Length: 316
Length: 316
Image 1 (cartoon, rainbow over the protein chains, first blue to last red):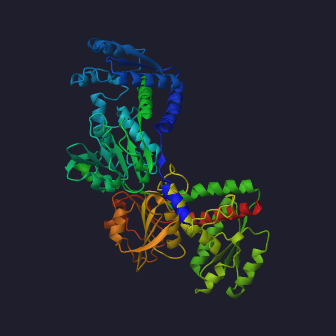
Image 2 (image 1 turned 90 degrees about the horizontal axis):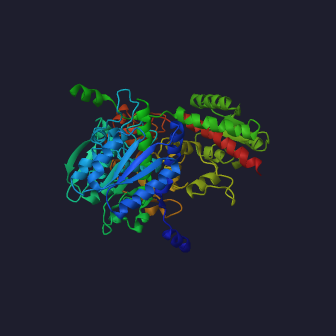
Image 3 (image 1 turned 90 degrees about the vertical axis):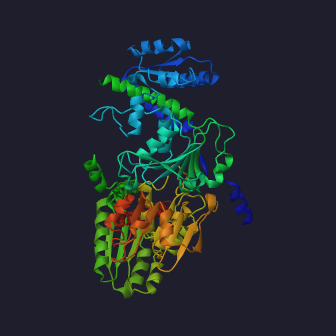
């Protein structure tokens, strides 16, 4: 009996879920959508830096596009020519979607460049209109609720991962499926952490959002009676928030940072979207489900957005 | 805007799930299993009291059996003749399942009578062998894991309801699907509350079990490393347990008892298996999902067990 206990003690009940498993669902969805569209949708990606990481990401996107039947074209341009090149492509009827590999200038000018891509072709979902819709829980672009707004790829990938691993309760009505869930997010960047906190709170969760200096609570209030989330600055330690949380999501871009596993509730769900490993392997002693990375799902969301844009456009 | 807020304030986000919706799934499952069996399975039910409630339950079972294609026969016998009648039916090869409407004598003799039904025909899952398997997390009757043990109908109905409403996370492996969930049960009867606490803890939940006098914690321990649950007597108030609980299940057989709604965590899931309404309507201000009764699912579990017994028997 003691041997039995010893054997059990080293076996972790945690299940690791790879982004590739989740991505597979969307490969099928995108392929079906392309068949329905009746032609390969075309995506143009602009590379205007010499960052090897960006080139690698571009190669990865190219491969995923080829696999699903998207016509992908990488255009390498000088950064001073990028704006004109994007304008020209905005007007090119043969192109359904446009993306830019950042950083280009590596300063505020990059935020300007994000906004020159036409919203009708913005596969990354970074246009101000889309981001504003996200924060205000506006899910459709038209009054008939037939054209869905576009969501930024990484936050959307995280939503899809949480759906896949059963955090979204499909018994609850669309828009309320995180009601009752408490989620801690370590990262409040404008590109992922803050929009993600808003998305999850708009779906009904109570979200504790941490950056280096501050803690914010995103919530639709008790009984989720508000139609969109509100944000309050709170005093709460990472330990206190984590002990209440059903899900912990990390995105700290540093190999040195490790989430304190001892704070985690037994059976918690952990997801890391940083390219650095924010959880040590001991996370498996506490978590029921662990998703170590999300990149492959993010790439599929680019294609999903591309198809949505192509469909929205053709139904004009 | 204030009118909008006022309207929202009276709209509850709670979704009520009726037992009939869950039962429907099993009507289909039982019909399919009967087709596969190739003959209508036969269930004999013994009524040896004059309790109008028992007669009503018998009529209800008869109707559900007719609807799904089960050959149901109600035999009204004198209580002194019941034991012989059951023995005879145990030996009758044309009968697949037997049940008895309790109370018969209304004392300890009823527990004796429960055990005279052959385990091979025990649709209610009350034979000691089955109950022992339940407590010890033994899920199969044979070494090849082809014949599943039979579970008592009401606890099984509650498991199936929790599966239906998304409390069981299907991403986790079979046997661990409640890992990370905390559940409070108000009722520790031998017939429902205690076996239910054991079943849910064996599936990975931490269960706080309340009866009038005591509180017990059922758990497979941190990291669910134990293969079966253990029980500890603890000091914990109903309020403390409820504030930690994702799910609250009540079974207090009194119209006077009302669960204190103010203890509930926002977005909790509430299930009542008592025939009395243990939750007042204000539960909907706090719960994401509310299941007001379970009876119709229990009746379907009788039939599901009947089919399992018929299948187990025919594969001998």
